[in-house]
Image 1 (cartoon, rainbow over the protein chains, first blue to last red):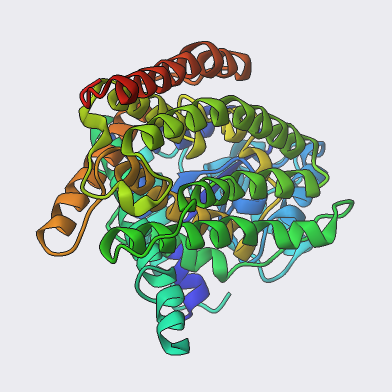
Image 2 (spheres, rainbow over the protein chains, first blue to last red):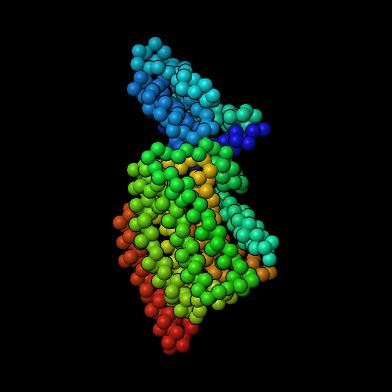
Length: 148
Length: 309
């Protein structure tokens, strides 16, 4: 077991990046913090600065305009961190597959920026809060064995 | 001699003990807040996980910042709180105390706020500079009533030694009770809890002075906060509520400490945040007159020889 990735899996601080999503996934991410779903059970909390982040929750298909901003967030975040692509748009561009102004999906952009960044895909349009929490917990559970 | 000094600093009243109790206290804060908000809350060792994780992360030094003060500032807070906790705990259970150690502890308790201000100013980020500015304003606001109420307690107990406070609950008189209320509000601000959390306002300043800190240095700020959760309520318990001693006295002291801590958490969870100017008004026109009244009552009670005033 790698202690750095163990630490991240035990206390994942979430930072929310919107790269041109329709705001539906954003609302579902905020839902995860409400008393009903309470992501703090797993140590997660929402932070306001990418410097504090362990998991970048990315929503949206990455529009042409938001790509440079997203790359700057990737540079600003303190390593090691992982990226969680929340929603179908972030995972595979979904209905924006052939759109001229979307350069996603998230995995393509992060691989171009840095090969080592791990991407966790949580599909759904929008994914239910249960699905987001389930995806995070399963992904972070597997992360324990990985060297970051 | 050297061995016992090392033991004092790093094991029993020092680093390990304050960290362990601080982790428990921080868990209590988060768990009780969660229960009040009808949530489940984090597991017992969550604060320890957070700190372990932060020490495994990258340390980023921002461009355009003052590098040395950026690196040194986070160390000030834990250092001051460590010394304060050693003085407080040893004077309580061993009675080792020197004249003026109340004043020393008061000065040491300023260090965490100073380290946040210095660190925030050193990052070169405008949001963190704004946070430091607010922290400074808050410090100006709460120091006056805190000093007034502590002075009232000193007059009441009749000595500048911490050992004179032990076994002599100052708050069991009118002036002591008033002073205790004023000091409790100041401790709330010193811990940076709602309603006085303008410096770290998560919704507008995104963490305030700490916005640029990452990795081990952020971990040091978290450690400073953990230790403050032990030291500040313990200071109140020692000065106003009679402190603790060995044996059953330690248990009674622990109960008093937990009660003060839960009181702080309840204030934290049932109030909205005050603006900077509102906080200043609250402390200067609300808490400071209360502290002054406590001081006057304590002096009058001392002059006419009535212990309960």
